[in-house]
Image 1: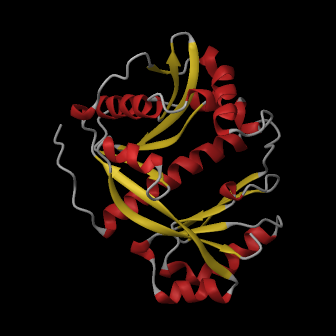
Image 2 (image 1 turned 90 degrees about the horizontal axis):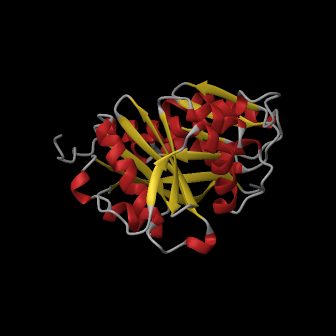
Length: 272
């Protein structure tokens, strides 16, 4: 495989942003397929923007707009009304390649303010950087391990055990050929989890977390490397990840061969 990093263009940046959107959209669609749709998931497009709403789950990460640009200024009021119908605060990801002064002015006029940044990373599957991490093994989750995966998921992220995402949606994800769910093992003990989605040759490296008592032992590196191997084996031509700027995750991704694509702005209303 050619490991030359493609030059960043606005079109490539849109592809990277689409991968981030696809990962979240895929997770939310499977959550919505659970019996009774416990989060009240609803997804709607407004031009090129994708709005994801969780009627019954106020966590703002699950109430989010991706892909907004100048073309969607005409839809901003409709987007706001969509979330207002569920009385939900929400955030809007504003990628730099789609940003114009007019878009930012439209958001400001409706009470939104920039509240932070998020960094998009990209690269190519380069297994020359892959090294085994002594004492650790990363394996694909099997159907009989989904309940265990759910426990590691919630404990690693330090969130409540009874969230609807924990079990039923993961049973669906593990059967989907686009998705790869993993557990990181130290001997017979599962110590971390991660996931990856491959769509049209683009591998989105999604969530990854380690149990608090096992952190700083190389689990994140091991999980990055296994996904790199599997992305190349699947014929992916691009790998994509998201992180907080200059964070530990950012450094891990750099060491694994990722490069900064762009840093996007996160906009919220003041009450959010």
